[in-house]
Each structure stands twice: as C-alpha cells, then as structure tokens.
Image (cartoon, rainbow, N blue to C red; front, side, top):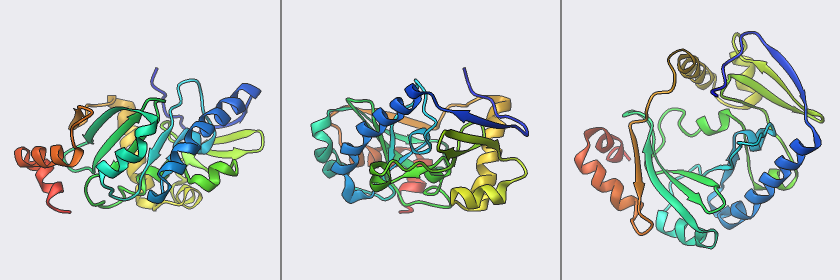
Length: 230
C-alpha cells in the first residue's frame, strides 16, 4: 500500500533487534559492491542511508558522475548483472541507466550531464559513502511521505517538513529550492497517484547502453534534446 504523507505529524520510533539486524545485513551487502566501484565515488541513498529500513527495503546505489557503462559492467561482472535499463522520468528529466545485480542491488548513473538539482536529488532522501557505511553512520533524509527522518541512538525521529523547508534543507544539506520542488511533486502524487515515466527501456545483457541511447536519441526529439545538450 502506498505510504501517505502526514500533515503536521511527528513520531519517535525505537527499532527492535530485528530492525537493527536488517539494517546491518543490507549495509553488509552494499559495502563490497561500493568497494568494487569505489573509484566512481558511489553513494547508498534512501532508507539504508537513514536507517529506517523495513522488509521491503532495497539497496540503491548512485554514481554522481557519468561513467563508461562497458568499464562499469566489467567491474560488476563478479556480482552477476540481472537487468540493464535506460530511464527518463519525464521528457525534461535526467536520462540515466539502471543496472540490477543478482543480489537485487540497483545501481543508477547518469547518461547525460546534470541540470538543475538532478544530482542533489539523490541526497534529499539521505546518502552515505563507503567510509560512512563502514563506520555505521546514519544520516538524515526525507522519505516518500515527506517526513524528515533524523537518526537517534534508539531509532529515529520523524517529522513532517511542511512549513520547515529552510530548516530541512540545512539538515539534509540540499538547496532549499530542491526541498520545495520535491514537496510539490510528492504532495501532488498523494492526490493524483503515481503516473508512468516517459522512458524505461530494458536492454539485453549483451546490448551496449550508450549505443542504445544514441539510437533512441536519433528517433525521439525529447531524448535527443538532452542527449545532444551534453
């Protein structure tokens, strides 16, 4: 069931032993992958970075710069690549690649240059680097309910962000305009539901991501606009 945003709501959550164990297990899975691709400065973002994981939590990794997909895939071969895709949320958004490993870890990296707050978007929900994972550090971030999750020794404190946008931007470490933009998007999604994304192209294991993107850009004006703007 889709989580709804809370209005003027605060919550203090204490984690059970199983919650801490689940977080440790997810982070232990992420660490060797980050070590393998450490030269690309990867981050783990979302609930695994904040600590508020649950039974459905996934490990999401983001590479904050453009990389050669071929070299990247060679580095990840040992984990088994189960899925490759090219995605674009709307005709105006970042074009990115997704690689899903056999252990269900999903790695996202840009295929074109960033614009606006597209890079910072992945830090809005909280993001940690390899050294922070090794040290057991958790960071604040905003979840899909528009709740600011702030880690505590016992779990976390969650508080809704409406009316506190400037404060939240400082706590999370992202631009104020990004907080306002995400608040607008997620609030609208609460009212009208999630809509489909503009592009999600699955690739065969032997297909080259950059070559397929070039083919898509040659046949789609929206994709071409972002592709040739790099």
